[in-house]
Image (tube, rainbow, N blue to C red; front, side):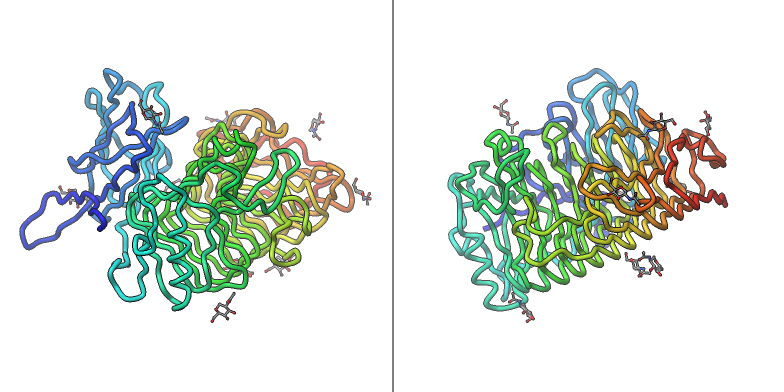
Length: 514
Ligand SMILES: *[C@@H]1O[C@H](CO)[C@@H](O)[C@H](O)[C@H]1NC(C)=O
Ligand SMILES: *[C@@H]1O[C@H](CO)[C@@H](O)[C@H](O)[C@H]1NC(C)=O
Ligand SMILES: *[C@@H]1O[C@H](CO)[C@@H](O)[C@H](O)[C@H]1NC(C)=O
Ligand SMILES: *[C@@H]1O[C@H](CO)[C@@H](O)[C@H](O)[C@H]1NC(C)=O
Ligand SMILES: *[C@@H]1O[C@H](CO)[C@@H](O)[C@H](O)[C@H]1NC(C)=O
Ligand SMILES: *[C@@H]1O[C@H](CO)[C@@H](O)[C@H](O)[C@H]1NC(C)=O
Ligand SMILES: *[C@@H]1O[C@H](CO)[C@@H](O)[C@H](O)[C@H]1NC(C)=O
Ligand SMILES: *[C@@H]1O[C@H](CO)[C@@H](O)[C@H](O)[C@H]1NC(C)=O
Ligand SMILES: *[C@@H]1O[C@H](CO)[C@@H](O)[C@H](O)[C@H]1NC(C)=O
């Protein structure tokens, strides 16, 4: 049996349009927020209490204004508020303890009220193609004795995947519940569907996992949920949660990448929450053709090296409509050396990375919001970050060429709103860092960079960099247009106005405002 999510049907005219907001049952291991409640069109949503921020996840039908009513449950009134993405210009009204606004489209929002922690509201579009657990070709994990109570470490999900893989094109269905699992291998041409209210949980106990690699500064680690090498057409989707239990895992001197599409083609990921990673959370590695959408990564700010999405040595990967909250980089693109540390389990020799697109993303980090690097051990060409937001970060956007001697080329940052910056990760702390750093592991060139329509509402703790290292590692061909510093309505016309004073070993920097 699977229980139905609460469906709020409001303003229903009999025989007319029924619109809905769907709140997913709060998994038993999470508590509700002690600070906020949320009503959507009058119906209470399941909030979740978390470290550093609280959150709520729902899906809604789009196209009609839907009322969002947040209450601060532990304070007398809403005095000040801030809603990110700021550029959405959401008009809200304060009504005593409540903040009220309306959304017509699904959005990911970060809301700050008074001095409360942030409240992250993640609204997805209504789910389409939900598998019917009783249909042919759908393998319900409960039929494979999966323990949905979280009391034991269960093999049932892997057993269901193994069975499903015998019939290519099948789907494994995970109903709401708590599943503690070891390493999971998603097989060729098999999909994994996580229903809203389901949680796959990492135990945090190293002995439950295969050690696949070791990183000198952290220790041994694993790929928790990975695709089979040489596979095609794998999809991970639904509205469920992959919970890395990362804070505890790192206390146990272990780490894990949580969702690892690796050595696979035509991969899709849609709609899931990935939280509390103990290392890089979602890492397409040596993947060809992938689409990751409606992805919500909720890492803790007090666990280090827990990047959101790292695309590694892959081609034609698109990340669209995603939020990544992390201590380390929210969204980055990297290439690495052969069989060293974390690359030991990679299936193939190093691959160049090209045609990577990050579109419509939200970053909240203490490191880089959107970044190439630090590894440029193989070529990285045609990587674009666009239509995106940095709620807060150490560095807004950048290319940090620190490891490897290859070229980063045709890199574009376009339509990016940098709302807040703080701190100086790795000595930086700026809205823009294009920088070749010599750490005795190679230096290399950066060519053809486009920086277009960027708003830097803050400049960061330090000034901007567009700087190479020497003759063999020049930053060349940087075209900058429409960079708006602070709240200016006219674009900056000089590098100095953009605080980019450090420009040694760079050439052909052009500012062309529209
Ligand atoms: C909320 O209510 C309005 C009418 O009052 C309706 O148009 C809209 O579709 C509803 N939204 C949802 C998600 O139910
Ligand atoms: C939930 O609340 C209970 C009671 O306050 C507490 O013991 C428990 O640690 C909390 N769990 C989480 C995950 O915050
Ligand atoms: C996966 O299936 C495709 C299509 O049948 C096939 O080409 C490929 O070799 C299979 N991969 C593995 C690892 O079995
Ligand atoms: C660059 O990558 C994008 C996908 O992100 C692709 O659509 C485009 O064709 C690529 N450009 C070139 C010149 O290959
Ligand atoms: C950059 O993109 C252009 C246009 O697609 C292409 O001709 C050029 O080879 C790329 N640069 C590098 C270094 O790959
Ligand atoms: C902010 O929104 C306005 C209006 O939609 C748009 O023109 C502008 O490009 C956006 N700015 C950024 C940096 O995305
Ligand atoms: C540039 O710097 C690197 C690293 O310090 C060095 O190995 C290389 O020889 C230098 N290249 C030139 C042309 O000076
Ligand atoms: C506009 O930008 C310049 C730097 O280019 C800065 O000195 C000034 O404070 C900005 N003005 C506003 C209103 O933000
Ligand atoms: C950046 O420029 C300033 C001023 O010219 C200089 O003092 C500083 O050393 C430069 N920083 C780096 C890392 O090159």
